[in-house]
Length: 199
Image (cartoon, rainbow, N blue to C red; front, side, top):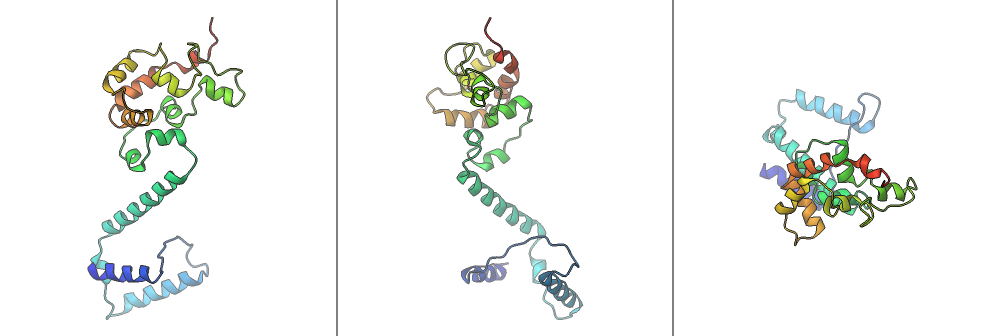
C-alpha cells in the first residue's frame, strides 16, 4: 500500500491528474481499445505482478466517495444558489448526516420557496408581502421565529434553543438537534390559511 501511495504521490508531483470516466466499449475509442488490449495481455501473462489485489475495493470506494464529497463541498461553498438551504446545512457533511423525511412543507422551509406572501409578492403573484399578523413581511423566517399565532411547538422550540445565538446558528440547531420538534412545527403550520386575506 505504501509503495502505491508513493507512486501516486510521484505522479501528482509530476503534474499528472488521474481521472475516471465511462466510455462505451468496442466502438473504436482509441484509449479504451488500448486499455482492453493491455488488460488481456496482463491476464494471460505468468509474470504480471498483481499490485491491485493489495488494495481492497472497499478502500477505493471510500477514497472515491471522500473525493466526491470534497468536490461537492467546494462547489456548495462557492455557489451563489441555495442561500436559504445553506443556512440549515452550511456543510454537506451535516446534510448527509441528517436523516429527514422530506415533505412538501419541509422542502418549502429548507429551500425558502414556500408559499409565503413575501415569496409570492416577489414573483408578482400577490400585491403585498405583509403577514396577516400585520407585524412584518410574511417571510419563512418571520413565520418560524416571530409570528405570534404559531402553535405550541414553537414555544417548545423557544425553550430548547438559546435566544442569544444568531439566526444561522439557530437554523443549524433546528435541523441537527431539534429535528422532530422543528418538523412538527412546520407540518402544523397551515400555509394555505396564511395566504387568505384578513376578514
